[in-house]
Amino acid sequence: MSEQKNSGLYHERREFFNERAERWLDLCYLDPATEQHSLHDPQFARLFEEVKVPADGVVLDVGCGSGVVVPYILPLLSPTARLVEVDYAEKMIAENRRLHRDPRISFMACDALAIDLPPGSVDMALCFSCFPHFEDKPAVVKGLANLLRNGGQLVIAHFNSAHELNHHHRKFGPVQHDMLPDEMTMRAMIADAGLALECFIDQSGFYLIKAWK
Ligand SMILES: C[S@@+](CC[C@H](N)C(=O)[O-])C[C@H]1O[C@@H](n2cnc3c(N)ncnc32)[C@H](O)[C@@H]1O
Image 1 (cartoon, rainbow, N blue to C red):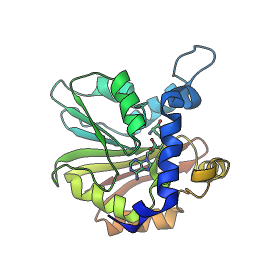
Image 2 (cartoon, helix red, strand yellow):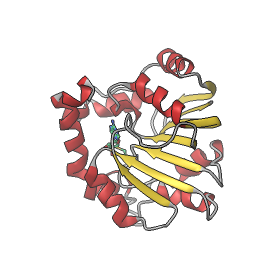
Image 3 (cartoon, protein in one colour):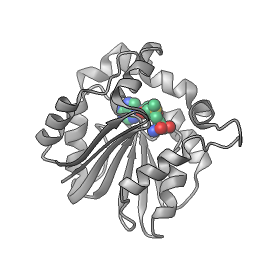
């Protein structure tokens, strides 16, 4: 067990997400006009224009929460593809499982550093709206790179710029120090994990890193 998992903050942060699991989609994605979780439909459309999901592959949705991305990814997958939903907050996984019953989905309640899949077995690892919360970011990037097959893709995405996101997190106790590192640090982290960066976008309302193994 690594030092970070013994730290009080690690548990506090996980409880912060557990406590919000059943309300997460309402809190973050509810469009009051339609009363659907469609607030960010245009940004998801852009994300999956920029990122080509491997239709027949294994897609890992790391820090998946209650599965906001699931309805956007499933239509892009063939009947034999797999979507693996991973989150360390067990209540997020329970809510995700309750909402999404497609046989292509499997669920793992575990830390991003402890994903029990064979090395080289993943086609795409997506970190949507979760990267700042990982305590040991270089280790997560290296771990995910190890799970990717050669030619597989790591995607880190947010619907904020790094500056907007870091400002947003400062308002919430246990995640107030959870920051997206600056561009130079992110580039170095990706290179150190043996990945080739294809795309780095950091603009108001949209952040995207695409890197290949
Ligand atoms: C801001 S929420 C986003 C959830 C989801 N991706 C969404 O956009 O609705 C961040 C998620 O990352 C998860 N998370 C944070 N640190 C993690 C870790 N070390 N391992 C696995 N999941 C983690 C949290 O439990 C939480 O569900």
